Amino acid sequence: MLRSDVSASYQELSEDVERVSENPTDEREGEMKVHEDSSSVILADSELGTTAPSLRFSKTCLKNVFSVILLFIYLLLMAVAVFLVYQTISDFREKLKHPVMSVSYKEVSLYDAPGIAFYPGKAQLLSCKHHYYDHIPPLINPGQPGDIECTTRRINYTDPFTNQTMKYALVVQGPRDVKKKELVFLQFHLNETDQDFSAIDYLLFSSFEEFINSPEKAEFMKDCESSYSSWKFSGGFRTWVKMSLVKTKEEDGSETVEFKQETSVVNYIDQRTKLRSDQLFFVVFEWKDPFIQTVQDIITANPWNMIALLCGIFLALFKAADFAKLSVKWMIKIRKRHLKRSQQVMNHIS
Image 1 (cartoon, helix red, strand yellow):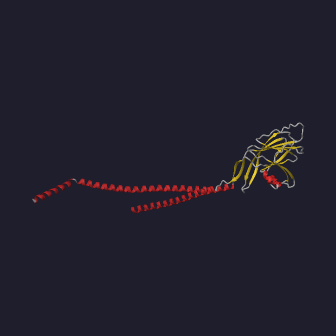
Image 2: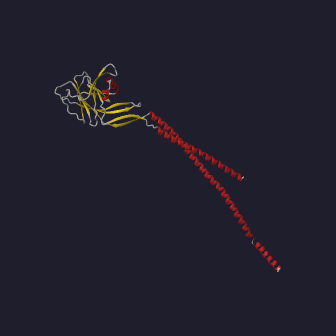
Image 3: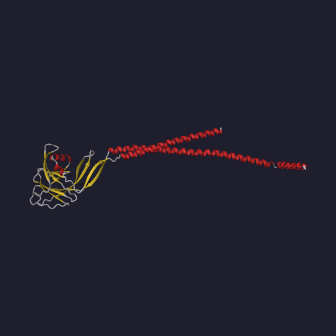
């Protein structure tokens, strides 16, 4: 029994040896496949290890380039902001030096009655009447004294420019009601004159009431003659004067008044029977429109607007400087990190 078991095991061992001796190539091929698989795995790992740092380096490079571009953009914006600050301050100073003229209009239905000062010389006032709605009735007995329905004052004063010559002035109250187109029609008569041209001087001042209430009427007229311009109207014509009022506000707060005039002249046809050597003067005063023009110099530079603009510009400057500072720090940090990784790789290779 024992002998049969030993012989069976010996027979199995001999069969295994024969099988191994018959197929030695299969085992070698298996070993080679194992070696090839391990080498391929090693190569793949090495390729992954080499490509990953290259990808990281390219991303880091792009980030650095982008940061540099942003830094230059913000530096450009800072330069623009500095230029805007300089330009804003320069414009503000220029506007302070050169104020802008502002013109406004105020509509009125009644004016303060102006004063009309005539210097007739040898001429005589024949008639003075108020009419309305631009209607003047036909003349009755021209050259003869008529009705004087105007408020008048006669005054003598010394010439304000020479202080020696005495001047005679006839002051007449002007029209008031501009809505009804009130006008004042006056007729003067001059018998003889030794001059080549006959004309009567007149000047306009702002308020006839101020003249009436003035205790020193002579001084008042001297001031008016010094401040206002004088005009003339000729004999043998009807001169129609349309007035407009201009008020000018000065820098010190004072206000000056000036009259603008538009005149039209119509020839007078003398229909008197007898040939005469005298001269007749006709003049009409009327308001042109119901608007008082006010002129003043205003400074368009607003300090609050400039302060707000400067605050915004400086805020942008601080933000840009802060961003530039953070960008530089971030670039330095990325650079140090890249150098550290490069050093680690070199140490690992060595």
